[in-house]
Length: 104
Image (cartoon, rainbow, N blue to C red):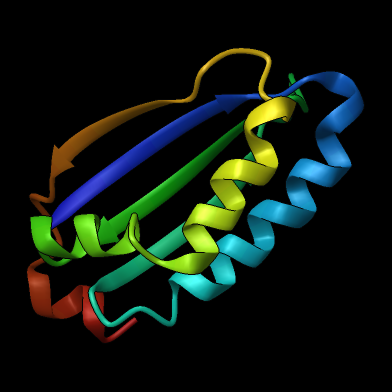
C-alpha cells in the first residue's frame, strides 16, 4: 500500500475553480480499482492551501491513475491556477492492514 500526500498552493482568485476541478478528479479517482482512498482537503488557516490524501494498492496503480483521462484533464485545467508547483510525498502504509483499506 502506498499513501501519497500531494500539497498544493493555489492563487487566491482561483480557489473556487480549483475546488470544482479537483472534486471532479477526486470523485473519478475513487472509481479506479487500485485506489482505496482519495481525500481532498482545504486549509483552515490558509484557504488557498489544499492537499490530496491518496492511498493506492501498488505502484502500478499510481502509474495507472496518471494515465486516466480525468487526471490529465485535471492536471491541464489546474496548472495555471497553481501559486507554485504541487509537491507530492510518498509514504508506506503501516496501519491499518491492507484489507482494511478496501473495506472502507
